[in-house]
Each structure stands twice: as C-alpha cells, then as structure tokens.
Amino acid sequence: MAKTGGIAAERLRSFIDRIERLEEEKAALSADVREIYAEAKGAGFDTKIMRQILRLRRMEAAARREQEELLSLYKGALGM
Image (cartoon, rainbow, N blue to C red):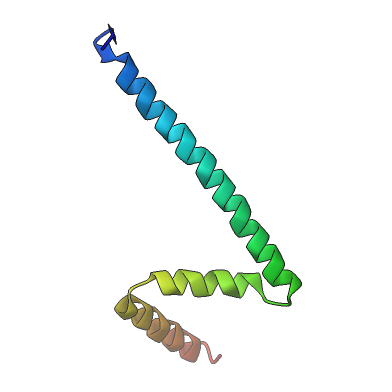
C-alpha cells in the first residue's frame, strides 16, 4: 500500500470513492422522494402534513405522546 506523508493513499481513495457513490445514491433517492411528494400533491394531498406525519412516525411512541400532550396544553393555555 503506497503511503504519502504517512497516509495510505489507496485506502483513502477507497473511502472517498465509497462516499461519492453513496452521495450519488442519496441524491437519486432525494429526487425520487420529491417526485413522490409531487405525485401526492397532484392527487390532492397536503405534502406539509405528510411530512409532519412522517416526522411523527419516526419518533418513539412515548416522545410522540409527550409532544402531543404539550401541544394540547399550550393550545389550551392560548385558548385555541
């Protein structure tokens, strides 16, 4: 393995290449997600609410309940 300045060049290149491939895949996936949101919007769905649902689904149940309870409490305090 060739070393330049104490760095294993081939190993570094391998890491960089892998990261670049993953970044390309991530960009392609992001484009796919945007297309799905556009399709949903075209079908009449509110994409802002869909994003909020996805965010809630990623949360643990206890954290989600706590957030919903606090939101309800705050809304009540504001007379909403």
